[in-house]
Every structure is written in structure tokens, then in C-alpha cells.
Image 1 (cartoon, rainbow, N blue to C red):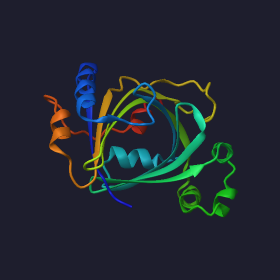
Image 2 (cartoon, rainbow, N blue to C red):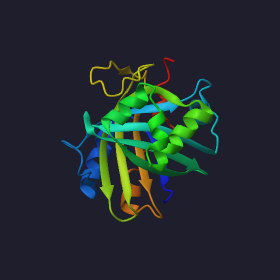
Image 3 (cartoon, rainbow, N blue to C red):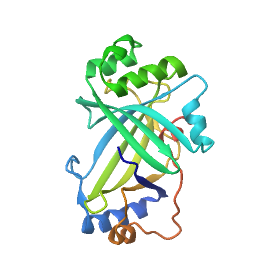
Image 4 (tube, rainbow, N blue to C red):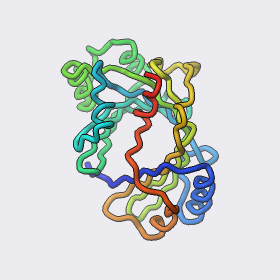
Length: 223
């Protein structure tokens, strides 16, 4: 497992158009993108005290969050993800879930998790029992991904961020989501040991600073 560097920037629509052109000239589109983009649906976990949300808002230096995610409305490939942050570096651990397993979690059927034989599923179960983590809300957005092999760089443009408010009907394509207030477009830049100058130069924008944006946090705007 390797921790990665991560920058996030809040950008405008005009910035996105500029970055899309620049990145298309120096990087490749992600092979999983359809017409240069894909739709992401995530279900985030939190407890009754909003532990995950408060740790983010308070800027706790060592924190983690769990989510279940699928892409382009395709429920044949679902992942459980744990994202950890330590001293500004990020680590993501993943495990595959079936649609039946994901639905069981949404429905409150957890006992199978401890017998799953998958360490990340078992860890989520343990923290659901000890910390009271439960499915909290759906987060939808559109992602435009670019990749650059040297440095294992991944640059994404994320927009149209939508919240399921208190809806956790994760696998229901008709679950209503609404715009997450005035959520901006987000530029994310992730890399391993080094960020090549060609990418560093491509993502430079005037008056654009690194921020600590959280899609989950902004999608809790309505509760």
C-alpha cells in the first residue's frame, strides 16, 4: 500500500474549459471513460454524531472514511473503499462487492460481513459495530479523468455534484438526487513520488490555491 499526494482546487467553468484543452494535449484520457467522462455514485458512511463529517470540518490530521461506489450506472462492478489521510497524504484501500452484498448493507443486514473472509469488509463491520457507522447519504457527480504514467499521475475534473440528502437507496437508479447547493467544479491532482513539470505547468491557474474540499461534506448541506 502506498500513500499518495493529493491537491484539490475549486475552479470555475471557464477554468475547466482551459484545463480540458491543456490536459488533452499532454495526458491520456482514462480508458474507462465514456466520451471522456463517467458518472460516479458513492454511498458514504457516518454515525449519529457525524464523526466523519466533523473530523473533516475540524481538519483532523489522521482520519478515514468508508464508501461504496459504482460507475456509469453499472452495478455489476461495485467497490467498497476506505480512504485514509495522514499528514496530508492519502491512501485508498478497495474490495469488490456484489450487488447483493451492497444491497444487504443498505438494508441493514450486516452479519454476513464478519464471515466474508475479506479484511476490508470485516473492518467496516467492526467499525459499524464499535463506532456506529451506517450508510448516510448518496453522492453523485461527473468525472473527467486524465492519466500520465510518469509519477503515476491522475488528474480529474469533477462537476455536477449532487446529493441524495438522506437517501441511501444506493442501487436504485431512480433515487432522486439534487444539486449540492453552489458546489464548485473540483480539480484533483494525485501522484506518487513526484509530479512531472509538464503536468504541474498544465494545471496552473491564476489565483487558484490548494483547498480541503470534501464532496461528502458539501453533500451534507441539507442534513
